[in-house]
Structures are given as C-alpha cells and as structure tokens.
Image 1 (cartoon, helix red, strand yellow):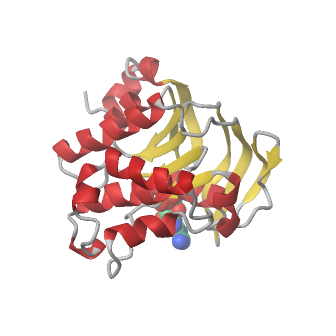
Image 2: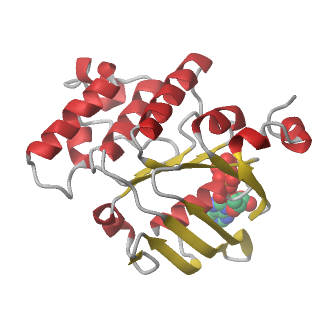
Length: 239
Ligand code: ATP
C-alpha cells in the first residue's frame, strides 16, 4: 500500500438551497491515520464526504493533501491525486462482472504490474470476490457488493480512502468482516476517513473521531477516549 500524506480541510460548508447541511467544519487526517465521522441521520456526514469529493457544491477555505491544493480539483480528477471513494449504497455496476467492476476502479492507471498486483491484493483481501469474479455484480449479496465497492476503490491504489457508511444494511457478522478489513487496511498504513452511523464499528476502526451534529463538529477526540464519554455512550452507543 502506498504511504499516506496528511489531508487537511478547513471551513467546509455545504448548502442545498436554503438548507445548510455542513456548516464550516475542519479536520485533519494525519498520514497513515484513520479518522471517523459519526452522527445521527441528517447530521451532514455524507454531504461532507460528497463535498470533499466535489460531488455536491461546496465552499471550502482550504483542502490540502500533502503539498497539493485540492480545493479546485474536480470529482473525476480526485482519483489521480490518490483519493479513493466508497459511496454510500455501493453503486456497483450490476450488469458487469465482479472483475470488470474492479478493473473500472483502475481506470486512471496503466495496466501494469502494480495494477495487476493490486487486483491480486483485492482478491486476497476478499477471497469471495475472487471466487465470484465472473459473476454479475448484481447477483452478489449486499455484503459482497460492499466488499466489491471497497475493492474497486482500492484498485486505484489510493493514498487516502473515503468511506461512506460501509456497514449500512449489513448483518452483524458482515459488519465484523468489514471491520476486520478496515483494521487490516489501517495496519497497512492506508489513511482513511470513515463516515458511519455505527459508532461502535467506527471507534474500533479509527484512531480519532469527529462527532457531527446539525452540520457541525460537536465533539472530537481519540476514538478510545470517546467510547468513555458519557454523552457519546448514551446517544451513539446506546449504553
Ligand atoms: P445519513 O446518515 O442519513 O446519510 P448524514 O449525516 O449523512 O445522514 P446528510 O445526508 O449529509 O446527513 O444530510 C444532511 C442534511 O442535508 C439533511 O437535513 C438532509 O435532509 C439534507 N440533504 C441531504 N442531501 C440533500 C439534497 N440532495 N437536497 C436537499 N437536502 C439534502
């Protein structure tokens, strides 16, 4: 896995007409670190992630990845700057095979030894995708499609992976599988920004975490510390 760079954002705002979905948030994902964003339905998590990717109109004071200014980079070019994106709801290409979906993830790369090794890495990370590589993606279960969406993003050999609710709609056992994968990627030094409603998963998969409420960062800190915070335990962990 490629070594990461620091990703930093300041004063990110998203409006949909008169609705302010994200209100001036800022944060840093240090090189090789994994940062979580939790929050209730409608807190603005997905909008923030889409805005970082340039998929919804945004205002941002600064957005940097290492020395590179990303604030004017278009969505289609983010991948060339080392940013991978796993969208909410997976969005796999149902009518294409599993392998073709994966290869599409590498569209911005040459078909060289590194890309071929990347495909082998994805099959090693998700053996079921290798077993089903010729099957149509639409025939996969929800959990398998989630693995495919993560694998497709990894095919671009990202230095930072943005993940939008990878646990959504999955059974507890599949959530554990996804957690194992995120922890493995973290162990390989891949920087990640993980947006989730599942706070337990997020705290286990990340080093630090932001809590979003009403479009703002209401709290932030080390994930291990947030699990002991009384308010977080009550509202987000249901304890
Ligand atoms: P969820 O977990 O349900 O995806 P979220 O924290 O990701 O929630 P967002 O989906 O970013 O929250 O939504 C933030 C706010 O923006 C909500 O009030 C939502 O209704 C609104 N919103 C989101 N997308 C749009 C849109 N395309 N047009 C108008 N309003 C939107």
